[in-house]
Length: 188
Image 1 (tube, helix red, strand yellow):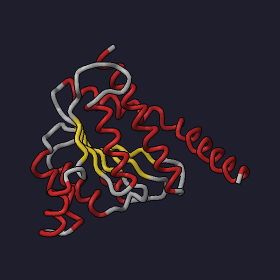
Image 2 (image 1 turned 45 degrees about the vertical axis):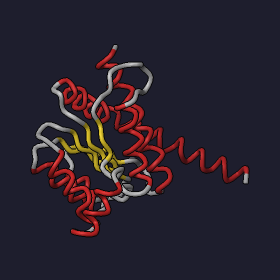
Image 3 (image 1 turned 60 degrees about the horizontal axis):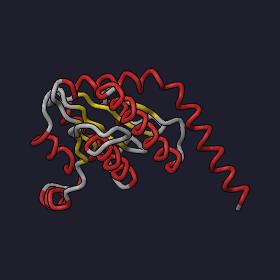
Image 4 (image 1 turned 90 degrees about the vertical axis):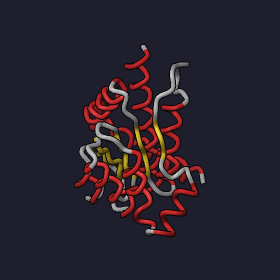
């Protein structure tokens, strides 16, 4: 077991070291978010399963706080209202749960994150497509394999791994980095 633990930790470290190569992209995304917040826009996030948990976690860091006691920043994870999700899934189909919410709540200039380890979740793709139609800035968080989200999103941070747990760990790391930098820029 000790060897397995060390292998898992070593792989997680390797992935995060490789992720350093995308620092300029993370900075670019951070600057877009700072600009959006300065223009009274909001951040929308969505994903399925562990990616939904990451979306909710990142939204909570913006609305609550990361390090600083500061004013709340508008952010919303679209899967958190079970009545909306289940009504849309029942009436239209699960693939529309994010698209329908984007239609009603996203405005031009908002930032929309679609999080998908595979980058091929149909409901995430449809949500990002609708967000682009509405003039939002779209950001994908995916794994390293070629995927549909990277072809749709304006920006895509691809975690250099094909292993779902390592991808998800790195998605939340990227989210934490962005939250830290946004907070620092807006409230320093």
